[in-house]
Image (tube, rainbow, N blue to C red; front, side, top):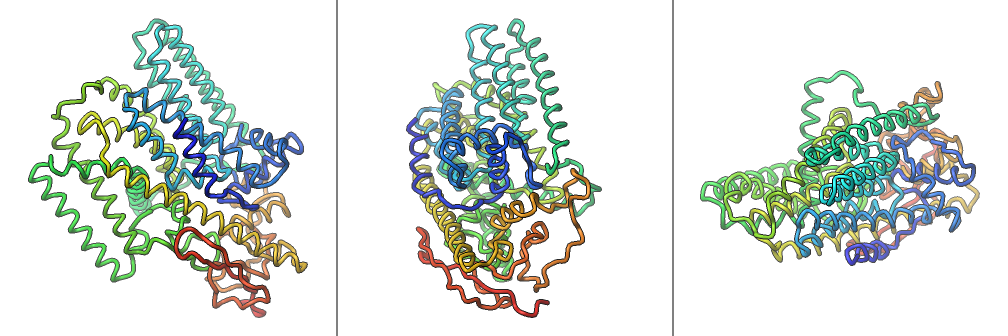
Length: 568
């Protein structure tokens, strides 16, 4: 409860108020709003997630408190707190000590990935809640005192996950993978294997019915696993994306992973030499790449979408121009080297030494085996479903949210089993620094979006329609579905011919064309809200908007520019 309350205080400290869409939640909020008004589920050409129970859940908050973007996003808050609570409970049930369990729960809840998502109406936190609920119920099945109780817990885990997975399809790995894995642990229990088979078949049937229903909905997007032929360059791209995903996951788990630096003294001489050589090679490579100016995509946060928006990456694609950053390239390089060396030392110690150490008396190895059986197949299946994204597109950092609890739990259990019972004080330092940055970064991100709302409102007050304003990716998406009813996405197949591929593009120079503009043909901007002044646009009569942040630079400005008279 204390972990959950601390996360609540930190989220509220960010002042999670902004009357516009954040990331992709403008599409989901529109669906919740329409449901609250009509009782019908209506998609708008952008959601690949089914949304499921999150739609009436958000509509309930609209009914109770009236519609606003902030009201709908607050519906995520109970799910975020429940996720932290369930994760702490699962850590304790797997034998993690109380102190280390608090570290693990807070590493999840105060991470720079979890906190911005908890302040939005994205489906990632809701999906994580359902995964952790399934895990907790599976643990209850394993520890039940009777065979009947074990069977009932498994039925509850599967049924709740089938319902929960309607919010985000990948959650169904709980019913399809995690529950059967748990049943294998209980294979000697009377009647449990038979019940597990029937439960799995029923879950699979329900999942197929839901997928078929979603495929038939107008303006719903189905993300196919096989999207075309595969070439050698695509496989290379996939390998790079997977490696970046591993590094990004290591970054998120750094408050626990860094504990392995304290085990330097138990490494063999050969392992120390190898680790030192790796560090020297990486340092020299960073120096050379830095001289060439090609470091940006090779250093943390490695993957895009959420973490980079917290004053880390200068170009995020949400608006034109370059945003101010707090972490310089030198700071990102240093943090990247710290993450990589922590991972290297972890791997060295896992390969060479610690399995020979005497285990802690209060950490029987059977709990590690249970964790591996319940979570191992789930984690492998989850990672496998990310491969098509890595092959045809990119892996977003928020896709790692479902793997982060697995990584944290494995690190905590392994450290207790193979190193020491208590995580070192260095973990506390890193956790505090990470949490402070996550809170301040989330606050500044929301402050930026409030400034965007103020900039657009300033233009609209002079009589300019919303369709003549480019407020950025997440602002223009809402304008498009308000005017046209759906996003002009080429993946949309139902209804036929809804996608219009031959619309006249904006006659602007390439640097002044937002990548999202083809999806929003209803927006024909005359005015542009930008991070920095663009040479291809001209100054407008509207003053810039200045806002304050908690991370340097503490005073930031966004600008309003006008399209040139002669567009090229």
